[in-house]
Image (cartoon, rainbow, N blue to C red; front, side):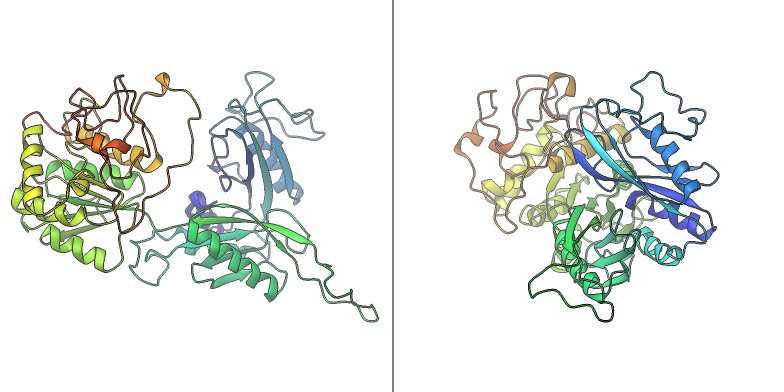
Length: 484
């Protein structure tokens, strides 16, 4: 529900009644994971989605039914239609624009299964005040890690809900901070809230959204009833859905050039927190970079060192050096390549790249540190314009973070969505592979992990579109215009 928190907060402020359908379980291949939500208000307006379009029409109708009846509902959608799913007595007809094209319309086409729970939130529901407070906190735009204690200051937060379970707990919600502190409550008493907050904080530390099952403390015994024997569990269990909102990844762009403006726009679109930095005041202005969250006039290396010292960089951070000035580029790259950030790239032609490698070696960087540098920057998209170049850079950042190959999906097999590779250790870079010194790699090389910082760890392919930045062939572009 986090991705529609701002819209739901607006509906709460306007006093609208609505129902929210949330994905609480996924089995196999599915377009969206746990926490994906679709909301429908009393007028039929829609926010969000649960399946990328496969079953949205059926979920829309289910939300309308739940809102009208005032009772929650659970539905399971699989690759084959659930018998009777579209023929429930008294069900509404699908609205215009949602009519099925065939009898398999309310089913996933990707082969997986999702389980959806729908809860009503009428305007007079006593839970609305707690929901509105939680949504306001969650919809505040987060800042960079370590920016401050306020909700918009980069704090990791988790939304905990009881989508299904005992009647007294159903619909309860709370927000949990990384230190285990929380706001709101589930309606099962302070002991349950503390236990759930502890479990949610542990998941928040890992950034993992998903269900958590916890024991429910027993309700107070009626007068005259004997207590249960020691060790007996009388309260049962309840499954809560923990949705994690972590601070956005950082994108630090050094060089106040037109390519930086385009990259700031794409980075913000991808949900990154964008900082543009250059030492030239006349060029480094918010008016030139309206999509950046921060525009800083400073020496790039000094700003990067300050951000690292303040703890505002992590393995998800990306550093892009676009300035073409060795006096600034080499010091900031020397700093970046020794930090545990996830991506370091530099713009320039291949001749510029070779000169940069020489300067970095003279600056004292080891070969394994230099091997982390993505230069020439970006994937080979044939990019020419600043916007196309920004797309190629962003594509490489996403591929590296998610473990992608950069190859066209039409030529690959296996799962489209997969878990990213494990992150490298925070303080050390793996020793270079002797084979990495070779000018190119063939398809017989072991691909290793994407993003470990070693040339040998980058997937190789003989086909076009390969994610092999060290190959002398057309696998990588300069990320800018020829000759730059």
